[in-house]
Image 1 (cartoon, rainbow, N blue to C red):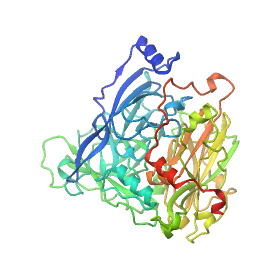
Image 2 (cartoon, one colour):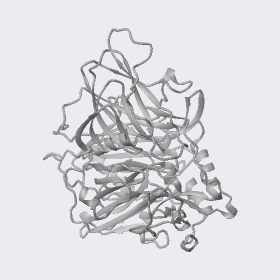
Image 3 (tube, rainbow, N blue to C red):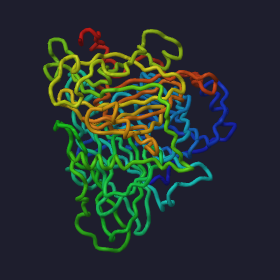
Image 4 (cartoon, helix red, strand yellow):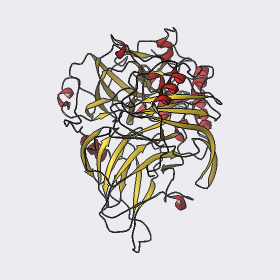
Length: 599
């Protein structure tokens, strides 16, 4: 997928002012970068994969969706017309949106869904980001088909911190379901049981050669010998990490989550859902065809995941007789190769150069220890499809998040009472052996369904230790994404976190900066960030089945002491909170449980 033809347009200064006045009813101090405008039309489109045709929600009729291409510091307006059947929101994954939470996008966190037959215009403020990001629907499971890449080029007058590549291409990894994903979601959350597996994985919308009825449409990337290509990778899959490799070619990873890193040259990389990577590949092999492979990684014990591989073909231009089959990357790690996964992550370091400095907060004012658990919730008459007739759940410190009926940002900004509680705990309610294989008591395995947020003062320095767990012998890694923040990953390890010895291993010199990070099964990971972006910001697992089960929370960052440290005023129009999403509807039928039911 080339990024050469992207179809955006700049607006003149007068048009910028007129547009924003119409949009928000107030004057705006223009950003230093350009102002760009896109139209996104959400509509049902027919697609055929694996010899099966279905109607699915898309943007502008494409899968993956349109590419947004900007320079660092630009401002983008995206007018979204919802011609679909469900309420939908869009999120600009990894865009910090300084002081601008109104357009961040997660449903019932910063807005209510855009109702069918209506439109809403997002204002996306780019600031420090540089590299590859992506956008996706942030309502129910619609992101499975509603997503696309964001390319953030260096600001005018600046360059990459590596030699200019000859070409660049997008590689978007995703999931494919033959059935309607909203129907699958409804069945899963009403039954309380497992989520249906995808029927295949895809590269740029195509399953590839190793699935039935798919070989004719496999994605091909044509290259020239001797050139260096920048591949912009996005993992848009619903529930799967991937090892990625190109047969007989080395990959040099130079960027992660739109932040540059010290180059990592390897035969493979590992990318978790929500993450993006910038990868240089030099075409220095014999003229021929080579498989690009995305192979699943899973560090849990369960076997309920899709072990198939999606493929594309890298094809050299020129006159030659090609082998009947492309070369295969036999060195790609096995699906359960924890050692190879750990080895890759441990190499990641920020560039930490004068042009791209590191500013790790040192004076920590708020410390949190968050246990990531797969839990259960009781079902009336043991009528659900989970273990012992219970409902499958997931939680942060034993809290399974429930959507409110009014988005938290509006409730906070307008001082509306009763929509959330401000007492998200800094630690789990019970301490135990988090990585034990033993079955644990109900006070650990059962979670409380509630809408709880953590309130932070402006400019607080926050350190969070995420602890992976093996509750119910169902532990696995968790890709945690934090909106509105770019955090530093300062440490990780296996086993239970030791608050005396493990901080001695922290990397405070050149830790990678990210917005999404994989917390290992039976292990821990520590991040730090400064709460200098006022507003309401979502935090959640980027495995959609876990987010559906409640592995979510939200932060409220209070305003600072000046207008420049405060949330921007809301736009004149926000989508009305008049209808529920599918998940919210079912949650309301389940009903929130009282804490004393889980003691």
